[in-house]
Length: 103
Image 1 (cartoon, rainbow, N blue to C red):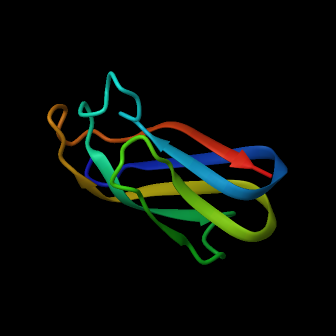
Image 2: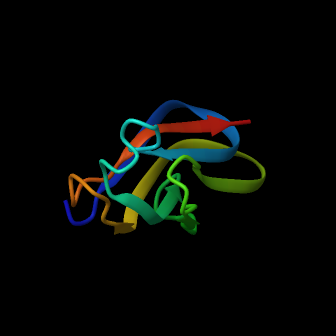
């Protein structure tokens, strides 16, 4: 997929101070098995809010983070992978092993 996107809709709003994005390949067995995510865009609660740009650390074991100044009510969010770097295997494949909202 040239422009992979993950969209999450939550039945009841959740308050969160940050969103953590764990890319696939973020464990010792799969570290070079998927493209490394370099940059992503996160849109909160639809298109009316300004999107956040996330630059991922070069270390595959670290997560991408969207940090808010204060707790936000989140009803939905969309994560678009904007840029990725080829690894040893599965070129063109990238995604997230886990996405979490933290208070």
